[in-house]
Amino acid sequence: MRMMAMQMMTNSISDAMERYKELIQVNSSYRIRHSQLLREQTQLKNNIQILLNEKRELLVEQTERPASSVEAKRLCEEAGMNICDPSAKQQQV
Image (cartoon, helix red, strand yellow):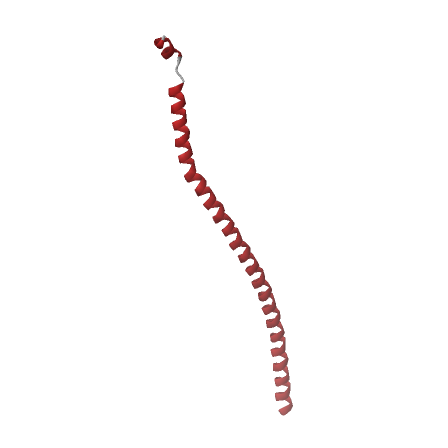
């Protein structure tokens, strides 16, 4: 009976050691995957920052455009006033 208990204990220890080895491998794969995900997260954060900067630049450009289009319209109107059409010239003569 004592021999049987010793054999059962030995088997239990062997099973526990096998399970321990499996868990070490699983843990290692999780650690590797975690590192990969951290690198991806860092890259995504960098990409987001780049996109935010580009958006900011586009917003600045967009706010400048109406001012420049208003200025262009004003210049065209001035040019139109300075250039007389043929019928206006005939009336002046």
